[in-house]
Length: 404
Image (cartoon, rainbow, N blue to C red; front, side, top):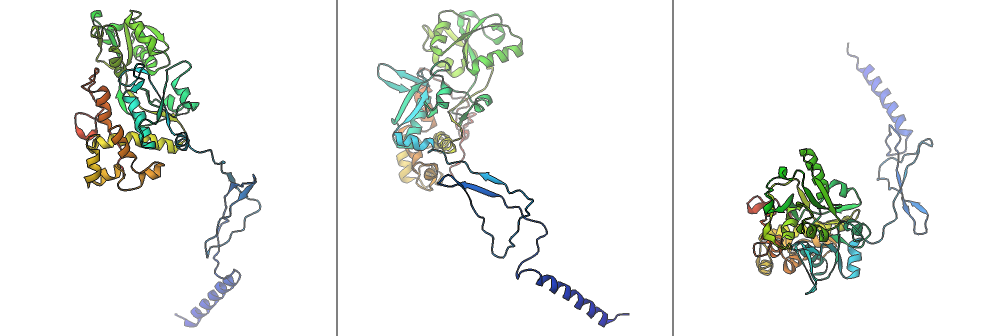
Protein backbone atom coordinates (compact mmCIF):
# COMPACT_ATOMS: atom_id res chain seq x y z
CA UNK A 1 0.00 0.00 0.00
CA UNK A 2 1.32 3.47 -0.92
CA UNK A 3 2.09 5.49 2.25
CA UNK A 4 2.81 9.16 1.45
CA UNK A 5 3.90 10.01 4.99
CA UNK A 6 6.68 7.35 4.95
CA UNK A 7 8.03 8.67 1.61
CA UNK A 8 8.11 12.22 2.96
CA UNK A 9 10.10 11.04 6.01
CA UNK A 10 12.68 9.33 3.82
CA UNK A 11 13.16 12.43 1.64
CA UNK A 12 13.58 14.59 4.71
CA UNK A 13 16.27 12.25 6.08
CA UNK A 14 18.16 12.26 2.81
CA UNK A 15 18.05 16.07 2.62
CA UNK A 16 19.46 16.29 6.15
CA UNK A 17 22.43 14.11 5.24
CA UNK A 18 23.22 16.17 2.15
CA UNK A 19 22.94 19.42 4.13
CA UNK A 20 25.36 18.17 6.80
CA UNK A 21 27.86 17.09 4.11
CA UNK A 22 27.69 20.46 2.44
CA UNK A 23 28.25 22.30 5.72
CA UNK A 24 31.43 20.34 6.37
CA UNK A 25 33.08 21.87 3.22
CA UNK A 26 33.90 25.51 2.35
CA UNK A 27 31.23 27.30 0.44
CA UNK A 28 31.40 26.60 -3.33
CA UNK A 29 33.91 23.73 -3.04
CA UNK A 30 33.27 20.27 -4.42
CA UNK A 31 34.75 17.05 -3.11
CA UNK A 32 37.82 15.71 -4.94
CA UNK A 33 37.95 11.94 -5.02
CA UNK A 34 41.76 11.72 -5.40
CA UNK A 35 44.73 13.98 -4.57
CA UNK A 36 46.12 16.15 -7.42
CA UNK A 37 49.85 15.93 -8.14
CA UNK A 38 51.31 19.29 -9.19
CA UNK A 39 54.47 19.24 -11.29
CA UNK A 40 56.48 22.41 -10.72
CA UNK A 41 58.94 23.47 -13.41
CA UNK A 42 61.94 25.39 -12.12
CA UNK A 43 63.01 28.41 -14.14
CA UNK A 44 66.58 29.69 -13.71
CA UNK A 45 66.73 32.88 -11.65
CA UNK A 46 69.03 35.67 -12.95
CA UNK A 47 71.00 35.41 -9.70
CA UNK A 48 71.67 31.73 -10.29
CA UNK A 49 69.08 30.26 -7.89
CA UNK A 50 66.13 28.28 -9.26
CA UNK A 51 62.82 29.97 -8.64
CA UNK A 52 59.59 28.03 -8.68
CA UNK A 53 56.91 29.40 -10.92
CA UNK A 54 53.48 29.13 -9.23
CA UNK A 55 50.59 27.75 -11.22
CA UNK A 56 47.42 29.80 -10.93
CA UNK A 57 44.33 27.98 -9.66
CA UNK A 58 41.24 28.58 -11.80
CA UNK A 59 38.41 30.47 -10.13
CA UNK A 60 36.02 28.07 -8.46
CA UNK A 61 38.43 25.13 -8.52
CA UNK A 62 39.45 23.22 -5.45
CA UNK A 63 42.87 23.85 -3.93
CA UNK A 64 44.58 20.53 -3.35
CA UNK A 65 46.71 19.87 -0.31
CA UNK A 66 49.64 17.68 -1.27
CA UNK A 67 50.12 14.48 0.61
CA UNK A 68 53.51 14.79 2.40
CA UNK A 69 54.37 11.27 1.21
CA UNK A 70 54.11 12.31 -2.45
CA UNK A 71 57.20 13.37 -4.38
CA UNK A 72 57.04 16.71 -6.18
CA UNK A 73 58.82 16.47 -9.53
CA UNK A 74 60.82 19.53 -10.59
CA UNK A 75 61.97 19.72 -14.20
CA UNK A 76 64.91 22.02 -14.80
CA UNK A 77 64.65 24.27 -17.85
CA UNK A 78 67.99 24.53 -19.70
CA UNK A 79 69.73 27.87 -19.63
CA UNK A 80 68.93 29.65 -22.90
CA UNK A 81 71.66 29.05 -25.47
CA UNK A 82 73.54 31.77 -27.30
CA UNK A 83 71.90 33.31 -30.34
CA UNK A 84 71.11 30.93 -33.17
CA UNK A 85 73.13 30.56 -36.33
CA UNK A 86 70.88 32.87 -38.36
CA UNK A 87 71.54 35.77 -36.00
CA UNK A 88 75.27 35.08 -36.04
CA UNK A 89 75.29 35.02 -39.85
CA UNK A 90 73.41 38.32 -39.93
CA UNK A 91 75.81 39.90 -37.44
CA UNK A 92 78.79 38.71 -39.51
CA UNK A 93 77.30 40.24 -42.64
CA UNK A 94 77.88 37.23 -44.88
CA UNK A 95 77.13 33.53 -45.25
CA UNK A 96 79.99 31.00 -45.14
CA UNK A 97 79.14 28.15 -47.48
CA UNK A 98 81.09 24.94 -47.97
CA UNK A 99 81.14 23.56 -51.51
CA UNK A 100 83.24 21.82 -54.14
CA UNK A 101 85.91 23.77 -56.01
CA UNK A 102 86.70 21.09 -58.61
CA UNK A 103 83.39 19.74 -59.93
CA UNK A 104 82.40 21.80 -62.99
CA UNK A 105 78.67 22.31 -63.22
CA UNK A 106 78.16 21.83 -59.48
CA UNK A 107 80.95 23.63 -57.67
CA UNK A 108 83.96 25.11 -59.42
CA UNK A 109 86.44 27.90 -58.71
CA UNK A 110 87.86 29.66 -61.77
CA UNK A 111 91.35 30.76 -60.75
CA UNK A 112 91.70 33.04 -63.75
CA UNK A 113 88.49 34.99 -63.22
CA UNK A 114 88.37 34.53 -59.46
CA UNK A 115 84.77 33.38 -59.78
CA UNK A 116 82.77 30.53 -58.25
CA UNK A 117 80.09 28.83 -60.32
CA UNK A 118 77.86 25.77 -60.30
CA UNK A 119 74.52 24.31 -59.28
CA UNK A 120 75.48 23.95 -55.59
CA UNK A 121 77.20 27.34 -55.60
CA UNK A 122 73.96 28.94 -56.79
CA UNK A 123 72.07 27.43 -53.86
CA UNK A 124 74.62 29.09 -51.56
CA UNK A 125 73.84 32.35 -53.33
CA UNK A 126 70.10 31.76 -53.00
CA UNK A 127 70.51 31.43 -49.23
CA UNK A 128 72.55 34.64 -49.10
CA UNK A 129 69.90 36.41 -51.21
CA UNK A 130 67.18 35.33 -48.78
CA UNK A 131 69.11 36.57 -45.73
CA UNK A 132 70.75 39.74 -47.07
CA UNK A 133 68.94 40.53 -50.36
CA UNK A 134 72.47 40.18 -51.78
CA UNK A 135 73.46 36.98 -53.58
CA UNK A 136 77.14 37.91 -53.30
CA UNK A 137 77.11 38.19 -49.49
CA UNK A 138 78.69 34.75 -49.27
CA UNK A 139 82.18 33.39 -48.66
CA UNK A 140 82.86 30.04 -50.29
CA UNK A 141 85.07 27.41 -48.66
CA UNK A 142 86.39 24.52 -50.76
CA UNK A 143 85.81 21.25 -48.90
CA UNK A 144 86.88 17.66 -49.54
CA UNK A 145 85.61 14.20 -48.62
CA UNK A 146 88.66 13.52 -46.43
CA UNK A 147 91.71 15.24 -44.97
CA UNK A 148 92.08 18.65 -43.36
CA UNK A 149 89.08 20.23 -45.07
CA UNK A 150 86.75 17.26 -44.62
CA UNK A 151 83.23 18.46 -45.32
CA UNK A 152 81.28 17.06 -42.37
CA UNK A 153 83.79 18.05 -39.71
CA UNK A 154 83.76 21.55 -41.21
CA UNK A 155 80.01 21.69 -40.57
CA UNK A 156 80.22 20.26 -37.04
CA UNK A 157 83.07 22.58 -36.04
CA UNK A 158 81.28 25.69 -37.33
CA UNK A 159 83.88 26.37 -40.02
CA UNK A 160 80.99 26.70 -42.47
CA UNK A 161 77.35 27.61 -41.90
CA UNK A 162 75.99 25.20 -44.48
CA UNK A 163 77.25 22.60 -46.91
CA UNK A 164 76.05 22.50 -50.52
CA UNK A 165 78.45 19.98 -52.06
CA UNK A 166 76.97 16.99 -53.97
CA UNK A 167 76.35 15.28 -50.63
CA UNK A 168 74.12 12.26 -50.11
CA UNK A 169 71.64 12.24 -47.22
CA UNK A 170 71.98 8.93 -45.35
CA UNK A 171 70.80 7.62 -42.00
CA UNK A 172 74.35 7.26 -40.68
CA UNK A 173 75.20 10.84 -41.54
CA UNK A 174 71.92 12.10 -40.09
CA UNK A 175 72.86 10.43 -36.79
CA UNK A 176 76.33 11.98 -36.67
CA UNK A 177 75.51 15.52 -35.44
CA UNK A 178 74.32 16.64 -38.87
CA UNK A 179 70.97 17.73 -40.24
CA UNK A 180 69.87 17.69 -43.87
CA UNK A 181 67.60 19.88 -45.96
CA UNK A 182 65.44 19.01 -48.97
CA UNK A 183 66.94 16.99 -51.79
CA UNK A 184 68.14 19.37 -54.49
CA UNK A 185 69.33 16.70 -56.95
CA UNK A 186 68.09 13.12 -57.31
CA UNK A 187 71.04 11.07 -58.50
CA UNK A 188 72.34 7.49 -58.68
CA UNK A 189 75.72 5.80 -58.73
CA UNK A 190 77.20 4.23 -61.85
CA UNK A 191 80.54 3.72 -63.65
CA UNK A 192 82.66 5.37 -66.31
CA UNK A 193 84.83 3.16 -68.51
CA UNK A 194 86.93 3.46 -71.63
CA UNK A 195 84.76 2.82 -74.66
CA UNK A 196 87.49 0.65 -76.19
CA UNK A 197 87.40 -1.69 -73.16
CA UNK A 198 84.07 -3.13 -74.37
CA UNK A 199 82.77 -3.04 -70.79
CA UNK A 200 79.02 -2.56 -71.19
CA UNK A 201 77.52 -4.03 -68.01
CA UNK A 202 78.29 -4.50 -64.34
CA UNK A 203 79.16 -8.17 -64.87
CA UNK A 204 81.93 -7.08 -67.24
CA UNK A 205 83.65 -5.41 -64.27
CA UNK A 206 84.45 -8.75 -62.63
CA UNK A 207 88.16 -8.94 -61.85
CA UNK A 208 88.71 -5.30 -62.83
CA UNK A 209 90.32 -2.43 -60.91
CA UNK A 210 87.76 0.21 -59.92
CA UNK A 211 88.80 3.65 -58.67
CA UNK A 212 86.64 5.35 -56.00
CA UNK A 213 86.94 8.21 -53.49
CA UNK A 214 87.71 7.32 -49.90
CA UNK A 215 85.13 8.21 -47.24
CA UNK A 216 82.18 8.47 -49.64
CA UNK A 217 78.92 6.60 -50.05
CA UNK A 218 80.27 5.56 -53.46
CA UNK A 219 82.91 3.36 -51.81
CA UNK A 220 80.37 1.71 -49.51
CA UNK A 221 77.80 1.24 -52.28
CA UNK A 222 80.42 -0.38 -54.50
CA UNK A 223 81.38 -2.91 -51.83
CA UNK A 224 77.79 -3.63 -50.81
CA UNK A 225 76.37 -4.00 -54.30
CA UNK A 226 79.17 -6.12 -55.75
CA UNK A 227 79.17 -8.37 -52.69
CA UNK A 228 75.44 -8.94 -53.21
CA UNK A 229 76.02 -9.72 -56.88
CA UNK A 230 79.02 -11.95 -56.17
CA UNK A 231 81.30 -9.84 -58.36
CA UNK A 232 84.97 -9.95 -57.34
CA UNK A 233 86.92 -6.78 -58.11
CA UNK A 234 89.88 -4.71 -56.90
CA UNK A 235 89.04 -1.43 -55.19
CA UNK A 236 91.54 1.42 -55.62
CA UNK A 237 90.95 4.26 -53.12
CA UNK A 238 91.92 7.93 -53.53
CA UNK A 239 91.54 10.73 -51.00
CA UNK A 240 89.72 13.18 -53.29
CA UNK A 241 88.56 13.82 -56.83
CA UNK A 242 91.75 15.72 -57.72
CA UNK A 243 93.62 12.43 -57.42
CA UNK A 244 90.83 10.08 -58.48
CA UNK A 245 90.09 11.19 -62.04
CA UNK A 246 93.67 11.87 -63.18
CA UNK A 247 94.57 8.38 -61.93
CA UNK A 248 91.73 6.85 -63.94
CA UNK A 249 92.66 8.91 -66.99
CA UNK A 250 96.24 7.67 -66.76
CA UNK A 251 95.17 4.02 -66.66
CA UNK A 252 95.50 3.23 -62.94
CA UNK A 253 92.14 1.45 -63.07
CA UNK A 254 89.66 0.02 -65.55
CA UNK A 255 86.66 1.99 -64.29
CA UNK A 256 85.81 4.84 -61.97
CA UNK A 257 82.58 5.03 -59.96
CA UNK A 258 80.59 7.89 -58.45
CA UNK A 259 77.25 9.63 -58.82
CA UNK A 260 76.27 9.86 -62.48
CA UNK A 261 76.23 13.67 -62.27
CA UNK A 262 79.82 13.76 -61.05
CA UNK A 263 80.95 11.36 -63.76
CA UNK A 264 79.28 13.51 -66.43
CA UNK A 265 81.05 16.57 -65.06
CA UNK A 266 84.45 14.96 -64.64
CA UNK A 267 84.40 13.34 -68.08
CA UNK A 268 84.78 16.84 -69.53
CA UNK A 269 88.08 17.25 -67.65
CA UNK A 270 89.69 14.10 -69.10
CA UNK A 271 92.26 14.35 -71.89
CA UNK A 272 89.86 12.82 -74.43
CA UNK A 273 86.29 12.92 -73.07
CA UNK A 274 84.90 11.26 -76.18
CA UNK A 275 86.88 8.09 -75.42
CA UNK A 276 84.89 7.38 -72.25
CA UNK A 277 81.40 5.97 -71.68
CA UNK A 278 79.10 6.24 -68.65
CA UNK A 279 77.19 3.01 -68.08
CA UNK A 280 73.41 3.16 -67.91
CA UNK A 281 73.04 0.80 -64.94
CA UNK A 282 72.69 2.30 -61.46
CA UNK A 283 73.66 0.59 -58.21
CA UNK A 284 72.12 3.13 -55.82
CA UNK A 285 69.82 6.08 -55.38
CA UNK A 286 71.61 9.22 -54.17
CA UNK A 287 69.48 12.09 -52.75
CA UNK A 288 71.87 15.07 -52.78
CA UNK A 289 71.20 18.19 -50.75
CA UNK A 290 72.37 20.63 -48.08
CA UNK A 291 73.80 19.64 -44.70
CA UNK A 292 74.12 21.79 -41.59
CA UNK A 293 74.50 21.57 -37.83
CA UNK A 294 71.68 19.89 -35.95
CA UNK A 295 69.58 21.25 -33.05
CA UNK A 296 69.07 24.71 -34.58
CA UNK A 297 65.48 24.57 -35.76
CA UNK A 298 65.38 28.14 -37.04
CA UNK A 299 68.42 27.57 -39.26
CA UNK A 300 66.94 24.29 -40.47
CA UNK A 301 63.72 26.10 -41.40
CA UNK A 302 65.57 28.88 -43.21
CA UNK A 303 67.72 26.53 -45.34
CA UNK A 304 64.74 24.26 -46.00
CA UNK A 305 62.36 26.98 -47.15
CA UNK A 306 64.99 28.71 -49.28
CA UNK A 307 65.38 25.45 -51.25
CA UNK A 308 61.61 24.99 -51.39
CA UNK A 309 61.16 28.56 -52.66
CA UNK A 310 63.16 27.75 -55.80
CA UNK A 311 61.02 24.66 -56.44
CA UNK A 312 57.70 26.33 -55.64
CA UNK A 313 58.55 29.18 -57.98
CA UNK A 314 58.98 26.72 -60.85
CA UNK A 315 55.68 25.03 -59.95
CA UNK A 316 53.98 28.43 -60.19
CA UNK A 317 55.97 29.39 -63.33
CA UNK A 318 57.65 32.33 -61.66
CA UNK A 319 61.20 32.74 -62.91
CA UNK A 320 64.00 35.27 -63.16
CA UNK A 321 62.62 36.71 -66.40
CA UNK A 322 59.07 37.42 -65.21
CA UNK A 323 59.36 37.89 -61.45
CA UNK A 324 59.05 41.68 -61.62
CA UNK A 325 55.92 41.41 -63.75
CA UNK A 326 54.47 38.78 -61.40
CA UNK A 327 55.18 40.97 -58.40
CA UNK A 328 53.45 43.94 -59.98
CA UNK A 329 50.44 42.22 -61.54
CA UNK A 330 49.75 38.74 -60.20
CA UNK A 331 46.49 38.21 -58.34
CA UNK A 332 47.26 34.55 -57.64
CA UNK A 333 47.40 34.31 -53.82
CA UNK A 334 50.04 31.55 -54.06
CA UNK A 335 52.35 33.77 -56.08
CA UNK A 336 51.69 36.72 -53.80
CA UNK A 337 52.58 34.70 -50.71
CA UNK A 338 55.75 33.37 -52.36
CA UNK A 339 56.88 36.89 -53.24
CA UNK A 340 56.04 38.29 -49.80
CA UNK A 341 53.13 40.45 -50.92
CA UNK A 342 50.76 38.65 -48.56
CA UNK A 343 51.35 36.96 -45.23
CA UNK A 344 54.28 37.28 -42.85
CA UNK A 345 56.05 33.95 -43.39
CA UNK A 346 59.43 35.59 -43.91
CA UNK A 347 59.20 37.44 -40.62
CA UNK A 348 58.29 34.21 -38.86
CA UNK A 349 61.45 32.61 -40.28
CA UNK A 350 63.62 35.54 -39.16
CA UNK A 351 63.91 36.91 -42.71
CA UNK A 352 62.22 39.68 -44.64
CA UNK A 353 58.80 38.79 -46.03
CA UNK A 354 60.08 39.18 -49.60
CA UNK A 355 62.83 36.56 -49.22
CA UNK A 356 61.27 34.44 -52.00
CA UNK A 357 61.22 37.41 -54.35
CA UNK A 358 64.88 38.17 -53.60
CA UNK A 359 65.90 34.56 -54.34
CA UNK A 360 64.13 34.52 -57.70
CA UNK A 361 65.22 38.04 -58.66
CA UNK A 362 68.87 37.51 -57.86
CA UNK A 363 69.42 33.79 -58.50
CA UNK A 364 66.30 32.31 -60.10
CA UNK A 365 63.93 29.42 -59.62
CA UNK A 366 65.04 25.78 -59.69
CA UNK A 367 64.90 25.55 -63.50
CA UNK A 368 66.93 28.76 -63.85
CA UNK A 369 69.61 27.31 -61.57
CA UNK A 370 69.64 23.92 -63.28
CA UNK A 371 69.69 25.16 -66.85
CA UNK A 372 72.35 27.78 -66.18
CA UNK A 373 74.77 25.20 -64.80
CA UNK A 374 73.79 21.78 -66.21
CA UNK A 375 71.24 22.36 -68.97
CA UNK A 376 71.28 21.93 -72.75
CA UNK A 377 73.41 25.02 -73.43
CA UNK A 378 76.22 23.83 -71.11
CA UNK A 379 78.99 21.33 -71.93
CA UNK A 380 77.23 18.76 -69.71
CA UNK A 381 73.73 18.92 -71.25
CA UNK A 382 72.35 16.75 -68.45
CA UNK A 383 68.80 15.59 -68.89
CA UNK A 384 66.81 16.66 -65.85
CA UNK A 385 65.30 13.21 -65.38
CA UNK A 386 63.42 13.20 -62.05
CA UNK A 387 64.71 16.69 -61.25
CA UNK A 388 61.65 18.44 -62.63
CA UNK A 389 58.67 20.03 -60.94
CA UNK A 390 55.99 17.42 -60.22
CA UNK A 391 53.24 19.36 -62.02
CA UNK A 392 55.13 19.91 -65.27
CA UNK A 393 55.02 16.28 -66.40
CA UNK A 394 57.83 14.08 -67.74
CA UNK A 395 58.32 12.18 -64.50
CA UNK A 396 59.41 15.05 -62.28
CA UNK A 397 59.46 14.47 -58.51
CA UNK A 398 60.46 17.89 -57.20
CA UNK A 399 57.77 19.30 -54.92
CA UNK A 400 57.52 22.01 -52.30
CA UNK A 401 55.02 22.17 -49.47
CA UNK A 402 52.66 25.08 -50.18
CA UNK A 403 53.43 28.56 -48.89
CA UNK A 404 50.31 28.94 -46.79
